[in-house]
Image 1 (cartoon, one colour):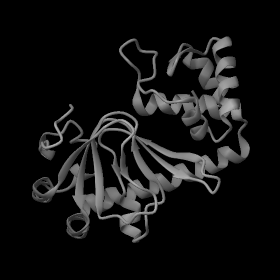
Image 2 (tube, helix red, strand yellow):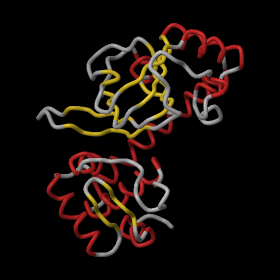
Image 3 (cartoon, helix red, strand yellow):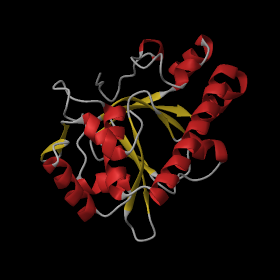
Image 4 (tube, one colour):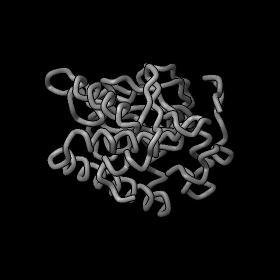
Length: 237
């Protein structure tokens, strides 16, 4: 649901009410968040926060798709995470007192709610439910980082690309046709997710198409043989 930039949706009626971290708070604390949050609309390509800046709160995605990306020493972008409606971002830097280690950029038009730091920390201290969910979120994030490091070290690029395409499907789903990934990513962005050169990604995508696993139309990617892609990714079915 896309809202004008000056409107906020009641947290109790958000479509992500049963999946978002914030909605695990007690009703009175959720109402407090609802009263003091600020809602903003971001166009595709706009920056929500910049790497290196200090956090003043956390962000909860109401709708749209967002990427977290880090610039390496050579100035090359490295996509760290893909996010969707219901996801919370900016919490790690806020809780550790560090600067943001990545930038958050809208992959498409997005509505994002901002919750001020003092309010969020106050709710964490007095609400065991949301504190526990935050610990689970941080633990899951650490696990994903460990798995990615292992795969970068041990899995061939071909397997990593197949796994990345399946991950994108799991994150954003497909369009009504049931095969076209519901997000448009450039070849460079896909290469960043895989952890390889853009040229290698372009070549392997062409091979996947030739092998009948996917079909390509500009930035549109259709997964035409999920089982074969799963075997190529060397994952458990």
